[in-house]
Image 1 (cartoon, rainbow, N blue to C red):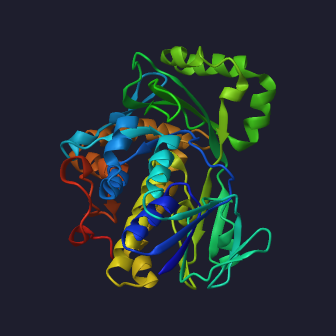
Image 2 (image 1 turned 30 degrees about the vertical axis):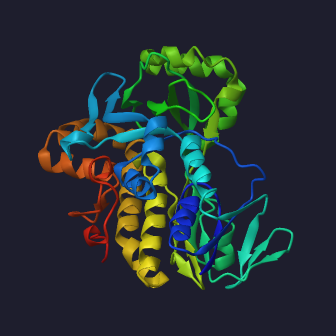
Length: 405
């Protein structure tokens, strides 16, 4: 087929690579003139690494990332809320703290050797079933398939009339990434809470494509309505508050000397009536953006791309793809909406309930297993899973996908 892909973030180039490998002619349209390795730290889960293994990109990404074995969440008073280790669920499994730019660079560099036509500085605004139209009115194509992977703020959802809901979360996060030369924050995704309105976290982030330094990401939960007041108060006031919540974060905070080192990130909740349309399919955040509380954004996007290529490679249809992805995606959208208010919300009741219940649940084998399966990106309904064994056994196989209804 002659295929166009809209968006060159994570799911878009992954889909392009997989389809080009099958022999399809693929063109990527990216609105940014000169896309580069930018972004915050992300947590790559075993599901995402499974897809990278199948792409042959896992080793270079592992070399750029920082292994995360443990999720440790506690109140500022020291009460244990989350205590989860990947190896308790599957021996040998781990998460990977990664600079988003490192993942982008690995995918983008791989496009060069595949014959994918990458057209930057072209903003696609609509799809007519055969042609992609850009913001200047230029018609591109014809194409037999359009893959939309242009993120949570996708322009093509509205053009395709598939958008059921796309709303901004009332909460977001401040992010900063600084060097961690002594690996003081290695191995653990650490979170500290004060009710549901205060959360500070640190994530080992590996290296960016532009530095050899080990990095650590710091994130701070914030209501979207409070961002202007935060800027008005200045960096010093926020650093003092963050240091009160987490004295151990001092080595990170000491490196922040300009408010421009701190980035505001807002999040969206996207629900589609269907992820497919007239020769068009929506993947990644364009199809199912959600709060990052479960750390699944990049992983779900990569898995979308893999399943789409798997379906098309076996002669399947877009309807087959939508069926394959339904339960896995629905499970995480449902879990995310349940879990997020326990960590980002107004009021005190949910925070008190979380502090009282989550820690004990982590010690019970059944609940710990369910939590770890969800963290790893593998949950499909209550008892089914998708493959999560890339460091040990390689990429996914079709016979091990129980993600059909």
